[in-house]
Structures are given as structure tokens and as C-alpha cells.
Length: 541
Ligand SMILES: Nc1nc2c(ncn2[C@@H]2O[C@H](COP(=O)(O)OP(=O)(O)OP(=O)(O)O)[C@@H](O)[C@H]2O)c(=O)[nH]1
Ligand SMILES: [Mg+2]
Image 1 (spheres, rainbow, N blue to C red):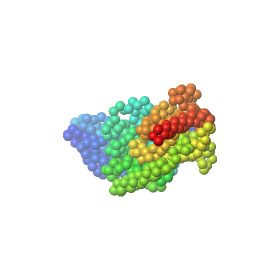
Image 2 (cartoon, helix red, strand yellow):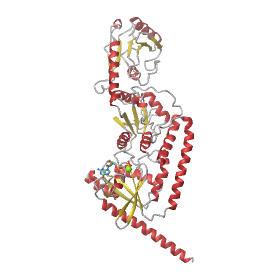
Image 3 (tube, rainbow, N blue to C red):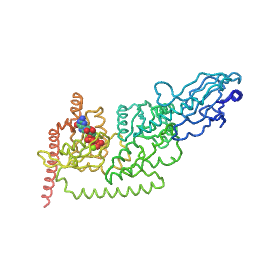
Image 4 (cartoon, rainbow, N blue to C red):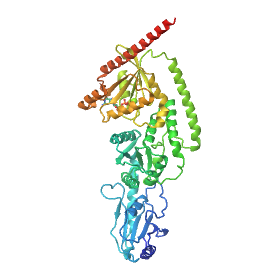
């Protein structure tokens, strides 16, 4: 690890020019570079992406001010996966003082100790005594072993989740929702954190120090995916990737990904692809830069990696030159779709059979309720209901029956979510507009999970955007079986809803009664309007 002569020369030089001096030494003792800079700014070769090894270099440097290893030295060690970093104390007129050395600790040791181990300082003449080589090979062996275990058990990408709390009242809920989204996308959440920050940092959102902490967490928890609950700008995502070496995606990408996984039918696939391309387009510009991935497990960039999935079997086409062509093709295709829908709408006799649109937050139990309404508990009539977000993407209609009304068509719709990505709202607008064809809306609320009120208002906000807030609406407080009784009682009061359990089939008759009332009212109104029109017509005859 360098010779006493080299150490002495460095100390003299640092003292003379009053700057830090660094040299990079490879494992055969050859000096690769010399820089007048501290460890963080020293010139270092790029890390070999995806390799489960150390960099193979030892950074030796002299501090004119003296003292042990600084925070900057240690993070340079960590972030660059150096074999070791050493600092020579040069404050004594260029006479080299003790040498401080640190090397990394093996991954998976979080909580027990730091990311690095600082060895006891040694006087310069003992510099040849330590066998850094043995230390380093032991460490590399351990890193490789961890990587092998990881490869063998890895069917899920392991992810760190970060939600920035800017003082929103529902920050905690947002983090929980992010966990659900990540889980639905097939990630294994190994760490989550709510980071309080009133002001976001332009480049890194959470600041360089926090990113370092997260990099360290990822190293020890063997994760290579970092998911942000905030939308990241293209430049921001790249900066965070560069700083952490992790694959970085945001909530929007995660949602797009889930939609891509669940999209069924030609039209939803086109809609999802359109939304994905619109979102990806600015992010592909300038994304050619090679990223170093610390701890990257090799396979993670393969087929089906989170954040790169396309709808159905098609992998998301990332060729920038073809994006524009594809975008206009998709837009044209979807335009055709909405025209066809328009015609269908016109040709259909205006609701000879009343239509109830089931709307609500994702995972509220809309599909389960549809099944329970239409007694479709057996395949193949059963609609997919699953404890995953956005299980339903395509509107499905089933005929049911309501006492006093007769046959009724129930339509299941795509679930809503707070801050639905703009591109997705746009893409699904045509689908969502079908909600407006209904006579009555059935708004399903999950009354058993915390935050029912916020979810109810998020849904109402989207309905308002679509112009459907004024439609006659019945609120169902679902999952009554799992709800805290007094919380449920309060929710009934506040939201004026009917408690039901779609799963246990309780409260269904009462809910149908409420729907019958609402439909009856709509029918009476329509009847009155028709009568009025007839009278007006009669006057002019
Ligand atoms: N305990 C309980 N769980 C329910 C009830 N209704 C639905 N669930 C569960 O909630 C989860 C979501 O149900 P879905 O019917 O798929 O919800 P959804 O609203 O259609 O969801 P998306 O289509 O993803 O928007 C499933 O795991 C259901 O089993 C209920 O009354 N009680
Ligand atoms: Mg559903």
C-alpha cells in the first residue's frame, strides 16, 4: 500500500503547496494518477457497472491541515468502492505524521457498524507492515457471496422507497400508498422513509447527504431500485441516478408500469403505451450517459424490469427516433376508437335499461361489489378482483337486477388515485368519459383503511374534472366487515353512505334499495321532462 518514501513525498508536497494531494494506486503498487485535490474531488476511474467487486484502487492522500480521515474521504471510499482510503497527516512542517486507513465493511452489516472500518493509525515507517491485500480479498469474497445468494433468491427487484413530506397532512398515507404501488408492480420493499423537507433541492430533491445515506442503505439491504413518491424531472432523475448508482423511478413511472402490466384489450394497451411514450420522451433526451450502478445485480436491467415494461407482450420501445412516429400513430388509432364510441353512444337507445357506473379509489372493492351484485362468484362471469392496485383497467359491464326497477347494467371502471399522472388521465379520458353515460354513479369507498375521507375527496376531484360531480350518486362504505365499528359509524354520518361488505355479502339489499331510489328519481325526472316537451310541442300544433 505505498512506501514510506511515497508517503513522505506526498506530505512534503501537500505542505509546500498547502493543498491536499492524492494518488491512486492499483493492486500492483503502480501509481495511476496524481491530483491536487481532496479525496472527493480526486480523479477516479469510472466504476465497472454491475460488478460485484471492489474498484481495485487505493487512494492515498496527504492533508496539509492534518487530522484523521474526513467525512469526504469516507464517502469517496464508499461511493467509489475503493479498496481503501488513507490519509497522511502533513501538518508538522511536511514531516509525515501517522497514517489513517479505512476500508469498506461487507454488505448486509447495517445496524451493527458503519459502512467502513477505520484501522488504528500507524506511523509512516510501518506502512509496509499491513497486509491490505488480504483484507481486500476477504472483503471481495464476501461481496461475491452476498451477490450469489441474491441472484439465487431474486425474483423481485428490491426497492427503497422515499416520500418527501413537505408538510402535507396525508404524507404518511402517500408513503403507504407508494408501498402498495411498488408491491403491485412486483417490487420487494426493503426500506421506506418519509423525509421531511419544506424546500426541495433543485437537483437532488432531498440533498446530497441524504442520497449518500440512501446509497449506503441500498448497499447493505442489497437493493438496486430507488422509488420516489414525487414526480422527478428528467434531469433530476439522472442526477440522482448518477449520485447513487441506483435505478431511479418516480411514482408516475410506477403507475404507468402497473397500467402496462394490467392493460388488456387493444384499446387500453394503446392508451397505456401512449401515456408511457409521452412521459418517457423528454426523459430519453440526453439519457445516453452511461450510468455507474453500485451494487447493480446484473440481471436487473433485463426483460421486465420495473420502469421499463410495455403493455402486454411488447417491451417499451426506447428508440428515440421512432417515438414521434409511434406517438402520432397511437394518437390516430385512439381517435378512431373514441369516434366509434361516440357512434355507439348515439345509436344506443337512451338507457332503456338503467346503467350504474361503479367508481371509486383503486382497491376500494369495486370489482368485488360488481361480482356480488351480479351473483357472478364463479368463473368465467366473475370479474377479476385482486388486492393489487389497478386490477381493473378496462370497463366491464354486467347485467344485474334491482327489485322495483328491473334489469340494471352495472359498469366496473378503472380505479382512481390521488394525483393521477396527467398523461394517464389524458390517455384514459375516453374510457373515463363513459362514466357519464350512466344514470347513477355508485361511489365505492374502502371504509376499513385509514384516510377514507382523503380518498373520497380525491375521487370527487377527478369526477369534478370530468364534469360528473353533479350526477346522482350513491356512496357505498365497503369493507364494513373489516372496519372499526365506531370509525364506520362516523363515516356513515359524514359521507352519508350505505355500509356494505362486498366480500361477506352483507348490506347488499340496503345498497340496492338506495340505488333503486336514485334510479327511480332519475327516471321520474326524465319522464317529467318528456311530458313537458310533449306539452310544449302540443301548444305549437
Ligand atoms: N375485508 C374486505 N375486503 C374486501 C371487500 N371487498 C373487497 N375486498 C378486497 O379488496 C381488494 C380489492 O378488491 P377489488 O374488488 O379488486 O377492488 P377494485 O376497487 O376493483 O380495485 P381496482 O380494480 O384495482 O381499482 C381485494 O383483495 C378484495 O378481496 C370487503 O367487503 N371486505
Ligand atoms: Mg377492479
